[in-house]
Image (cartoon, rainbow, N blue to C red; front, side):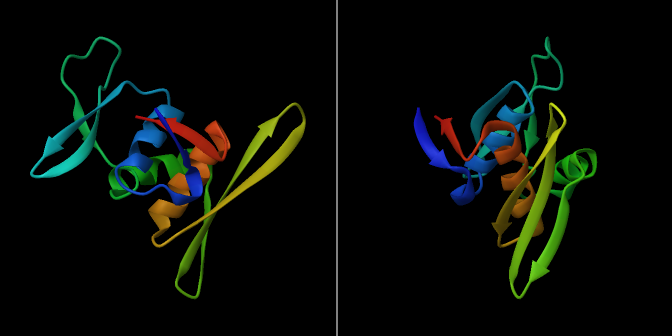
Length: 120
């Protein structure tokens, strides 16, 4: 395992971190020459599905909506903010990215796992 700063994660490590933050069972595999994250849709599922919330709105959009992630663009940089609520306090987690999905997924992971994650 290696430590990564969430603010520097990109595809496919960012997708791994999002799967971990959601508590999903996942694996890495090759698909058409690219390393991809695959998640298992249920606890007893034997077949996995491709998963890329940092690239695909069909995966990342649901997380943005459910977590209430706010997005804004200043010049050419996207910034995402997610609020975490715990013990009557609110904490904002901000993250930047070159796309709205990358910024949002970085903020989401940071809010769940902290600013540094361990990934294979």
